[in-house]
Length: 123
Length: 123
Length: 123
Length: 123
Image 1: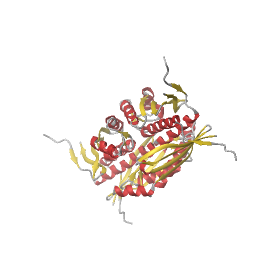
Image 2: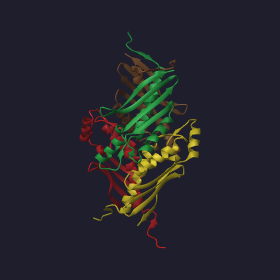
Image 3: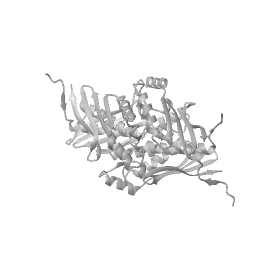
Image 4: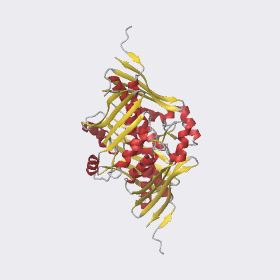
């Protein structure tokens, strides 16, 4: 019988990238739906950064809630706030696992919030 | 046939209390599970207050994450952070709906986080 | 000095309405943001009902995720799923607290998901 | 000047592992905090599977809420339900990205819910 596939343990880079993915999924699904307005956006962004930086191997998180898009969404809803969604967020993170550093980010691309690994560094 | 029950529209006080309940359920289930440590607790508490104050009729929210209990939970887990639960939270709110003000709070009682209406004021 | 306001403990009806509000806020902020498609909508609606029915005094929860609006939202996003928001939900609940029954619901009104107490019954 | 690090784009395996991590973070932080009892656990587990399987590259999700631990947690709280936490969950997933399949899981290890990549297969 011929083996078509080879199963291996993950490499250090793959584990590092897995850890980075956990942080993005956590950040997004913990905070999506939070009521947000121009007045509360900054406190929310800071809390998101500090909360996710608690997670293992997560050395830096930067969150921006895009003010112009937030104001536009609020105006479109004829409301005073909206619920946080990916379309309002720019996120970047640095994850360090053993000798690997992962730089990853989330931003809008073609109208859809895309999470991606930007680059991998090895010491 | 005899009517055993009478269905009525809600009173102003009942609507005001309903609005207060919405804010407590929202606050709790939006933020429960957030990674929290002594270093990040304050930013989280401030973001929770500002987020929920966006909601209609919600004029004041005060959130405290109890530092001693947080440190104890982290030590018990041999971890550097824990996930936010009701056992770490003291919350009080003031909701104004028409001529009714609702004062409500959440705190531990018999080992369980209890949400309750403390008092109702009418102008 | 003249008192302009009178602070009283909540009535049974107000406590019942507060309890109803908690359930709506919980349901909404626990599940908003969940990935949902026509194939997964029914399992999500059933889980939402069963989860919230665990909460005290909550005797019945009915959740419908509106199929046509869900399909339209997915088509508009050129995606295969969307995140659950209030614009896709119809919810009704029955809360019983002491001798008071609260009927409450959430549905779209003027393009906005509105949570409200429909009626109050006393035995 | 000597370069100490080399920055590269992620490999296919690293992107696949990143995608797997996103699913674990999403599942955990979307559903942690949900009220759960023995009667509602199965509907919740099925909804979690179906929700996360909507996400890109996610071909299979298996969720079990451990009944004995759930009943023990409820008894310890003298309650009729508890909020879902990692200590009650076993999760396994299969993620396919291009020619790479990632098998990943979450289970308790030393009293802590550990998410990990179990193996990587290449066609």
